[in-house]
Image (tube, rainbow, N blue to C red; front, side, top):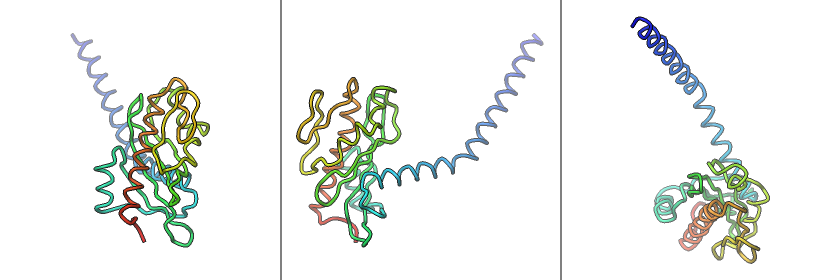
Length: 197
């Protein structure tokens, strides 16, 4: 009986120490993690809309309308050029892939052209769906017309279609859902006269 009590007490002490260590580590690193995520988000915006030199959040009623009506979009940004003119918009969406939610950032310029797309955090299968983060895949979106929705082809992509990732059509479809929601939100913004200065 003493051995059981002694073993239980030792396990309790170890558990308390481990929990305290994890809590301390979390407290020390949480600001750095938030900062790293913000930097990754800013880099993705610059990569998908390279002609922009700075970005501002779309706010107010327009942001609410985008988030409520153009799911899975969660954020929208106005891209400004070097002369402080609007050059396009960037949208961050969270479509659901094979492994769960994924971050998709899409840029669209005022010529109704997709200027780039990047996949951020995701839980897709390594070697399959995770290929959505490969340049060979996401570069297909750049240059696509935003005058119409982007399609996904399992065979040979043509027109406004992209070639699906072999063995990961669900991931390809999810990424394209994010891109197409961005196209729809872009058209709504333009039809309402744009946002920003």
